[in-house]
Length: 176
Ligand SMILES: [Zn+2]
Ligand SMILES: [Zn+2]
Ligand SMILES: [Zn+2]
Image (cartoon, rainbow, N blue to C red):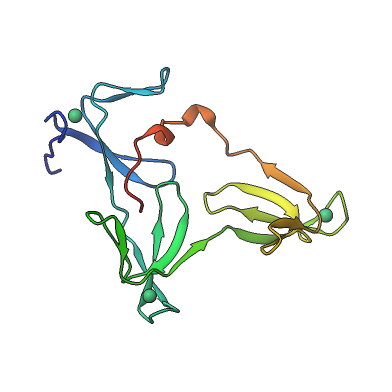
């Protein structure tokens, strides 16, 4: 691996670490995440590695250029126009600004809602959380309120707090 130095203290950077949401980063080798204080001991420099956007077989509805699939630091997925970019110096978007956030997926279940008897669906959020909800439930975008049956059951099986690695406490990076 290429020897890279920390711009803050000059120590070498450590190996690439992967977060639970699939983002990759390199910390300063003198920095150690302290699970008790939830702070970094030593140098707190973190270098986020870019996730290569994946080109999709879909065209931008605004300009006709190909769309790319991008994953944010928090594991949210979106489709955006391949001509769109971010000018770090001017802090403004460049190119085409088409963005489509990808929400979770819905699967039909062979189970009935205990509240109203309609079928349940399994909803997986973009970040991988799962819940069972009633197939009659919806969201009224105009009124900004839930419609239909409100039965929801979150599935907590995959929740492992002891595996928290402090990712959520890391310093913010520029958007996307
Ligand atoms: Zn450092
Ligand atoms: Zn476009
Ligand atoms: Zn229901």
